[in-house]
Every structure is written in structure tokens, then in C-alpha cells.
Length: 382
Image (cartoon, rainbow, N blue to C red; front, side):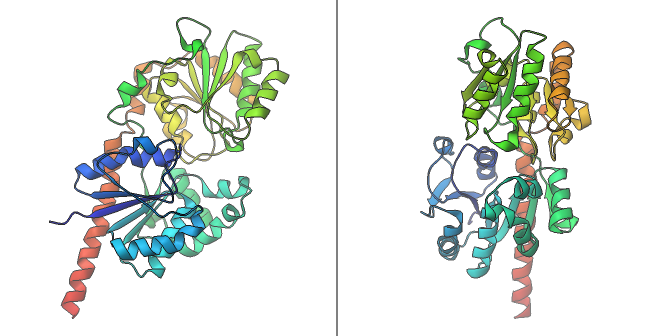
């Protein structure tokens, strides 16, 4: 019996949340009986070596997303997959256009991982500026629309004028079968060896969205009162300016920009507090990951995701976006009165791979059932 074919369409296997999500979910899709293909523009990115052996790999051999339209049309005509799922705004548009122009019957699912209205405001790229308009025009053509949080769903409804019944909220998975092993792996950073001052941890690309400027300013205020250290994991264009800021504030010797870490979980497990300082998010994977590690969290109450994960403050303190004083105070209070580790881990373990995979597969099966019903109707009508 022919397996239902599922194509996961991404630009690359770069170090992003959506790439990590689908790499982690793919074995569960295979286990459930799907024939899974990762379709990339090119085989590149730091997660390329993590691609599961059970899946097939195909590339469109194009350099830019907009150049993927014709290759994707040819792929759909040649392969005739049952389901095509994409997880980034530009890829979402290309997948819908390619399906339309190829006159393909593939069931197309688009996933919105971030708050699009905020992305279109903060990102200077013209294509992000026009993305809300393109979403309003074309996104209704998708067979399934997945939002990573209730906040992202509400943003799509309010700004993209999408009906609520078209959107399914599936929270990102962060607890995969190897979570405990990864969490307990050794970490080489000297500040996390043995007994030393408490370490505050930030994780994310060094870009404006993550607002590590506010985190460093909050840390500098806190460092005047107590002996603490700050580690930030990630790379990006703001690295030099963040180092300059730390020097100007007199805390450069207590701030470590430790670069991208393929496995950040050991850092989380050993940190005293995980701080998310973002201006906006779609979900906030690192918040959920820190909880699953039993690590206390302070986060901005940004749109959208962290407040949902922390249940409006039940599992960690929330502070206004861009408020260094409030952030410093919340970090200090968390250091003095951390929530019990078991309480935090219980919440973090609600975001399992199995739960997310089941939600996605329920959607897949519902769309395939609709397709079978449509085919039966056409046969009966003929």
C-alpha cells in the first residue's frame, strides 16, 4: 500500500527554530507511516548533519526564495506529493503560488512561527514589508494554516483578516526523546564549572528583535549590586556593538558572547536564570526549553508567546519590553526567590514532540480524508 507523502519545504537547514522543530518531528511522522521528504533550496546550514536518516532529501538548487517558484512547480508536477508544508513567510507564498501554477492537487499547509505584523515593521527587507498584503490576498488558498501560539493566531486574524476557524494553534515542540541526554551533556564554559557567581543566560541571534541591548543594560544595573555574570549564546550582526556597550557600561569582564551553540540545553540547566529580552516572538522556544530544564525564567511580555508559556507569570516573571530597570529587578527577585525546579519542569514537559506531532498528523489526516471524499464525489458524479 502506497504511503502518504509529506514534503517539508524549507530554505535550508540553518540554525533556526522552525528547522529544529521539523527535524525533530520528522521521525515521528515516519513512524506514523508517512513518506517524508525535506525539500530545500540548497543543502546548507548547521543542522544539515542532524537530518534524520529515515527521511529523503531533495534540493531545488536555487539561491533565493523567489527563485524557487519554477523549480518547485516542476517538483510538484514530477513528484505529486500528498502534503506540502512550509514554515517561513516567503516559503509559504512560494508554496501557494507553485501549487496554483502547477495545477497540483497537493494539500498545502503554511505555518506562521513569528508575529508577522511585528516582523514587517522591524525588518527592513521590502519583501517583509509587503508580506501582510500578500498574506491577506493569498493565505486563504492554503488548505491548512498553523500558528505557533494563540497570539500569532490573533495577529493573523486582526492584521491579515483571516477567519479564526481557518487557523490551528500548535505550540512548538521542545522536548524530544533525547532531551534529557542533551540537557545533561557536559559544558565547557568556565563560568559554568563548579561553584561560582550566578550566571544569567540569554539565547538568540544577535539582532534587534532579541534586544540584547536591554539585557546588557539590565545586567549592568544588577552587577552594581551583586556578583553575577552574563552569557549570551548566538551570533549575528550586532555582536560588535553589544561588546562595545558592555565595555562602556563597565561589565565587559562579566559578559561573555559565547557564540552559537548547537546544543544550548547544558547552558540552560546550569544557569541561574534564563532571560528572554525580545521585542517580539512567535512562541519563544528558549523559554519553554529553560522550564523543561528546571531553570527559572524572566521574559519580556512581548507579542507573542512567552506570556502563554509562562501562563501570565505563574511560571516566571514578565516585564515590559525595553524596560531595563524592570528587567534588572525581576532578575534579582528571581535569583533571591526562584520557583521550584519541579514546578518549572512540569510546565516545560507539556511541550513534547509527541504532542505536537499528533496535532500535525491530525491535520494531515483530516486533509487527506477531505481529498479522498473529493475524489469519491468526482467518481460518483462521472
